[in-house]
Length: 278
Image (cartoon, rainbow, N blue to C red):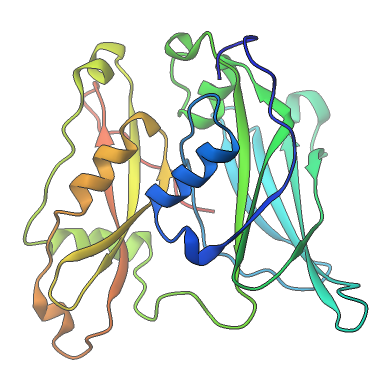
């Protein structure tokens, strides 16, 4: 949002039925209703299992070239519930790992406790985690020159879709390594056309799009898996929807395939390499 011209967002947690936000466009529309000031973009989505144990599920949200990072730990716990039936709490903790400032000891940036129900999604902005352009570029834009991002404040929001009763993971799931081979098998590849404004700013980055492929070889659903250049997220989604794959992939199993298609934007001889998901 514009630097110093608007009130910072609150840390209120919003709740919505997951069935109402089944794709990228509906997520963005829902988030804009809650946060009408400023631009909103999805930088990363992941599927993770969280257990009611002392060992958290940890996700590396952002990492810089000097080794510093921001990590998200997720813990599950039994809650009081309605007084009769015990409930479930999700406890997200965002930690900063800044070796030059705090050695090897993580510093907690935000801790929340959310009473969760199956089939619902929860989201909030970490209001005390405002990133200046230099840090935003360092951690979330692959170390790009911060100049194009000046004049704005950047906030990180977290969203969680909860399913306690069934496994939402696709039965035919190709991880990022397997998806590299899947891309090679595509019978139609539509490339992302880089807008002139992005070329003029000499921005570099990647967008990894999660795709669901039907038994007819058509892409029937797309979502952002990770992106370091969110200005072209919509263009990447539109391009990925036009990809096609051989029906021979479904000769023995008609179950839809979930995998990834990756687009890279670079003004350098070497293409930008997206980091591995951790």
